[in-house]
Image (cartoon, rainbow, N blue to C red; front, side, top):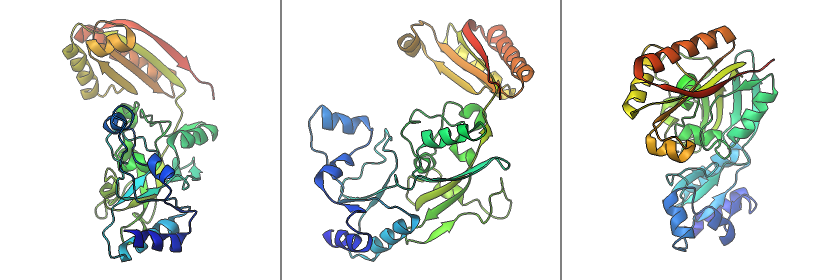
Length: 321
């Protein structure tokens, strides 16, 4: 195994191939609770990766994979984005870690075509800030890992977010991907950035949710939307969880689609909100106040009139510009 590490250092340099124990220890876990418990509660020394590669370009990644493939040893490679996985996806014991954090540029924001092109190591929060600043745009993708997750990590794990009910999951936002294949070849999966095509299979679905098994995502072209100007939030209590489920089912079947819909059972509602009944948090948003109001009124009729929901309060907001 040490032979391939030496070859990587010779090819990329000591500044891009890190083997120091202190650094390797930082990459020995992600946010998987089991690993955190082993480290912080049981005081275990977690197995470390063999080395951490910190590429500064897609060519660095291509070169690293070629060197690893040419070696005589079979060495696993783990891609490290924000390290925010709670399932151990970034756990790299005995592997070579490729840390994507320096591939973090927002390359292009095309507001006319509603597209953003970013490098895979860009953090979601930073991309969202840039989009908000450029004419008030957004990915409208807000997972729990918003502050830590990288774009490549979101795609590789098929992320979902709080606004996915209306705007879709990450797979619905991906238009095109640049990837490095296991043999080091660099390729875009589509020749142009159109919303869809009917000529052959869509190769992006091989990499969305692939956890890095088939290659390394290095750039992504994603759909963006203008920030909504009108939003209504509200909450409803139910006597049973089943009433809440049926209310949401009717809304979705009849295409009264909220931006956010979070249904909590009695125990979770009590812990989070001090409410001793199942609780639905729901919001509608858009660009025309009358349409948002109409959707809210229809949803209110369904929730209260058809399924016994009790209105628990809410707020309406508008953004100018």
